[in-house]
Image 1 (cartoon, helix red, strand yellow):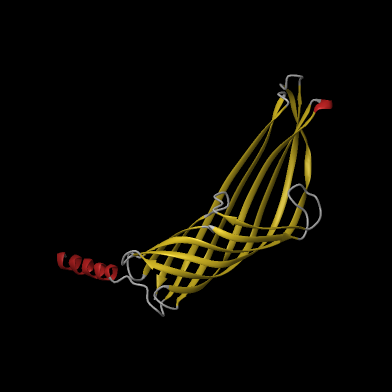
Image 2 (cartoon, rainbow, N blue to C red):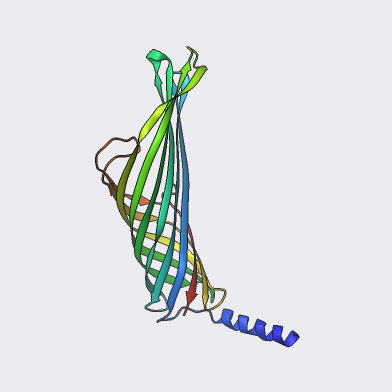
Length: 248
């Protein structure tokens, strides 16, 4: 029994010691990432009633990933997967003439497909740990469905709530969107054996982003929408990613 354990230990150590990236290696794995943000803005309405605007966003994706090593430091690859998000917004509006506070609640879930070609440059920190920079183009197609309702609160002259009732529902809005980004992100690859790799990464630290949809927005105003811009070290949109790879 002791001999079996000794041989198994030596085999694991040999796999660990020689965990190296080499030209011609292929890595197949599964990647996941998520990002959560919450933004709260409170406006004091002339000292009468504080109006709150709260927005929560959760973005996540899971993607099978394929990589091919052109050398011990360069790899090219492709990731294709599922992406989803949920956005919740709460906003308030004060009608002074009627002493009425209207609180609107919107929920916007989305589901889609992402395709992301990339290139990675690896810098060895040890036989098992590698720092990398990843440059890539991420494209995403989403189907988005928005719905919501609002409450009405009557307040007195001092801003104290007297009664609250359900005001009504907003009509459901559905639309499709397409977005792409070009960016650079850092990460760490840890190889406990020469066949297994564990990757930890951040989202793009530098990126250009563009998105457009075919109509409507969270406030249910019809019409096409588009946005674009550069971002650098935006921690509100930066996600945390993990991956597991098998090398052969």
